[in-house]
Length: 130
Image 1 (cartoon, rainbow, N blue to C red):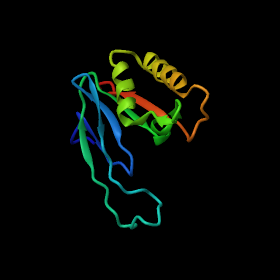
Image 2: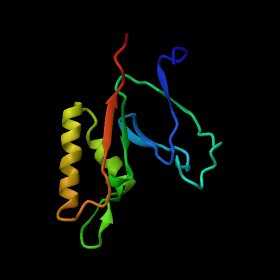
Image 3: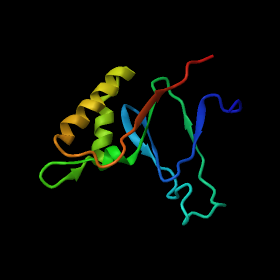
Image 4: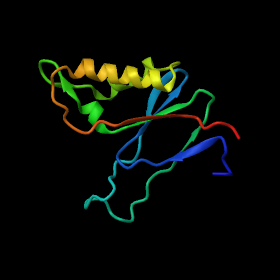
């Protein structure tokens, strides 16, 4: 948006994004509505949230598959809190190092358990200044 060059707008359909502030990741929650769901009224308006860039901003989008992946004796999932802990370990790493760390943690956690759902994690940094 040319009126807000130091920020972007986020609107989530039953999905949030993870952003780092003060070297800690946090979840920016989206609305609790889904797209294309019969229970969601087609006129539903999603909340737009403005996210301001910082020099070290990295943002992650993730499907719920990584947080729902089970392991261990009782099949407990990774969960949102543990996923944020994983992201916090990526702070200060380049994109390749962060990707490797997330994949390594997932393999270690998953062990021999089958994958429950699709797992997609996308990370991106602040766009370069023009």
